[in-house]
Image (cartoon, rainbow, N blue to C red; front, side):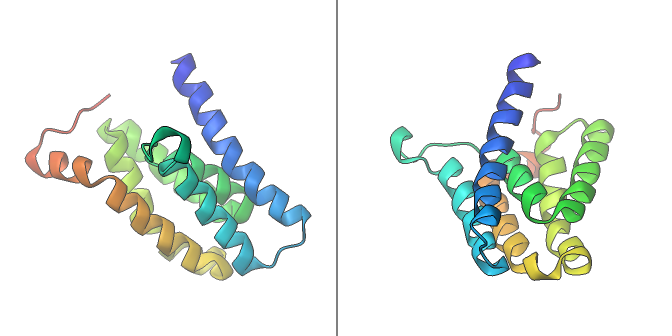
Length: 141
């Protein structure tokens, strides 16, 4: 449990740091969104690990909290509730990704495109999980 928590903090932290530095540099909204996308893609496709990285959910959490706090907080609650209910992390992640652009549209419209792009990236990254879910073979906690 502790290694998972530390990994979550590390991955979210690097996303938040990237966007936070963009805020400090005075970047406008569209550039902050690009920084966030770059941070998540850098996590998913790291050069130093032969482009074999994680799924990007925790890094998206960190970038989202620094970019659009309320949208991301709501998505975090959705993710957590689904995880507790269904006990399947990928299902919770995919549901939150599906809702992200809609929630962003209402709470942080400047970042709706950011949430659309990263939601699509997360769905593509979870393609194996989607197949396993469809077959009823996805692992639960």
